[in-house]
Amino acid sequence: MRSTDRATISPIVTASISRHARSAGCCAKAGPQRLGLFTLAKQEAVKPNERQFEESRGTAFGSGVIHIHAKLLIADDDVCLLSSANINGRSFEWDTELGFIWHERGEAIAEFRRRLWWQLFGGELPSRMNLAGWRDAARANSLADPQDRKGFVLPYQLGRARRFARPYWFIPDDLV
Image 1 (spheres, rainbow, N blue to C red):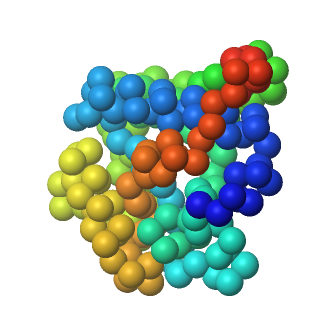
Image 2: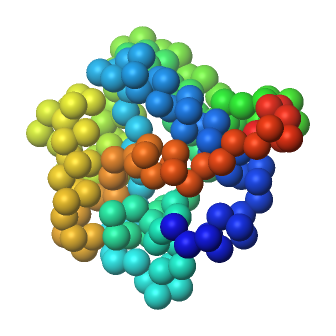
């Protein structure tokens, strides 16, 4: 990473990324078969105006990242949480966030999940409609040229986030 990449970004942002990367790593270790972390990226190569972000977190596997603020959690096709809130003190105590929980037995949430993944994988669903299938499809996308990918889903690069992040002792936990 170029030294200027991190120098131009707020310490609060890099501290927040540090906390998120640490939390994601703990969750991935605790439940690796039940947690999927993915990134959405464009189906085109990095554009000239995006090249400055290639060494930081603005690109993934040769494409510009699609930044979506919403967070989505689907648990066992019975509960869905859609929210703007991050799981941190700043979102819970300082920022104004919006979220809703959808709890419904039956096929409604499962159908929502299938339609969402159908859209994110460009109209083609992984052959196995489970987390392992999604991981395999995201991994295959990461190996393909951007214009040849099936949809927008790529594996989340946790190691890259960890390398970019910087914790700061002088930033209170409730601000990140």
